[in-house]
Image (cartoon, rainbow over all chains, first blue to last red; front, side, top):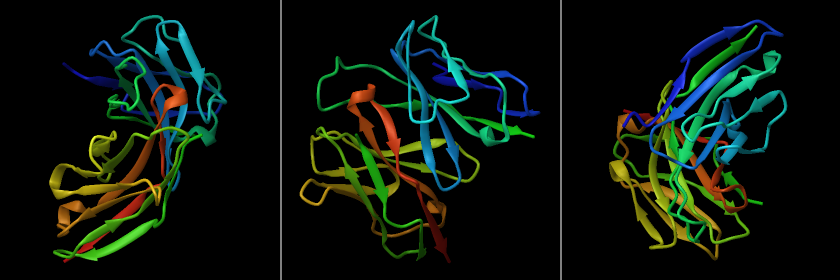
Length: 118
Length: 114
């Protein structure tokens, strides 16, 4: 298993450009999510998905778009990049134990994509 | 809503001395709690997790954490720091309402001096 993979590892964009950050997992996990990491802020949830065709917003969704057409892939789109989107982006996936408390669901993180917007 | 507060942004210790990283949480449900570590320019590594089986949780590399419901705390400890422990540590709570997505604390940077 490759686990959670992210591409590219590093990207430089100019303000106003668009791009897609790729995330894929080969563990047949239902849940996938995107986080951004900024100094002193920890990681913050951008968007998440609970299955193919189902997505929802997290804490900081503005400026980002997602869709999920397959179980394996969960791309994150920047529609018009801004310097405030300079960050490190992490994708994560987890299985579902049927929503039974307490959770045994563990998030598996990708290696991250470092994005610089000039 | 879930939240996590890491009480120290930086903690400095000498090699061989104990480590204590403090974390308080707020949760509407029985929480699942985690500690993650991130070494410089690296990804996230899960140190340990609490999911109500036992209040004292042992993790990797000699770390452990104790869940105290009455104090809403989940502090991370290690008896003896090693130089390789220098990293940023995140206390994290799982958000039941958002399908186990994670709410992170802002992080504690652990500095270890010789």
